[in-house]
Image (cartoon, rainbow, N blue to C red; front, side, top):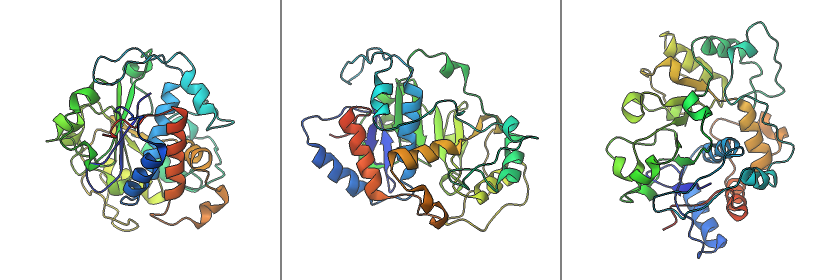
Length: 312
């Protein structure tokens, strides 16, 4: 599996390209820490990488025909490597939240957001009533899910990697990473975009494909309320955000998904090694730990679970 770490603006981003193995991990880590310090909500990047790992563990890789080293990934190889990072992990949890799990069913969660839904079920139920949870059949039927995670950092500027990125089966973008006008560098294909209200692009139709899955990564109860007011065209929520999210967000509800907080929990507990007891102390804008994130990325690079393909 290739994962490219790139930077196109102020936020750190993650995408697919070839790892320069001649450079030491120390140099890579220094670069990552330097770039990570410039961003906010970096946990999304590690989360996106983890989601790629989840998808990839039962896939078989075929040869690439663009400027990426040809390699074969036997069935289960990534799963074995990931097991060294994530212990006691189960794939039984659905990737996206489903209405049936909240409608007339008590599903107590041990955590509040961002790692659970405790206390937010009422707003969440109204959001799930108008959105969906399924993965497109075109993705489900893939024998091999070759994934690229792309963000909005300057590393891809003038890289001419757009064509290579488009050849991946799954292209995941973060937050409001731009596409329009930068297609030659970042590609034009977007399978899935992870975001939270403050990072939602004001024009989702311009920056995404018609079939792009718009995946809300909820960090706080207000995130569900924002989504509800947008999709149901109610009076907009203006308070409770560190930055004003879009008041008009023209997106197809059928393409909207709500990420299961379970994967946030696993990312935080298993990959970032964050103590769960600290959850109640977390404040808006502080759900990341720079040193933990850098170490997690370094470990994944060392194990060969991911590759930094923009280290050039």
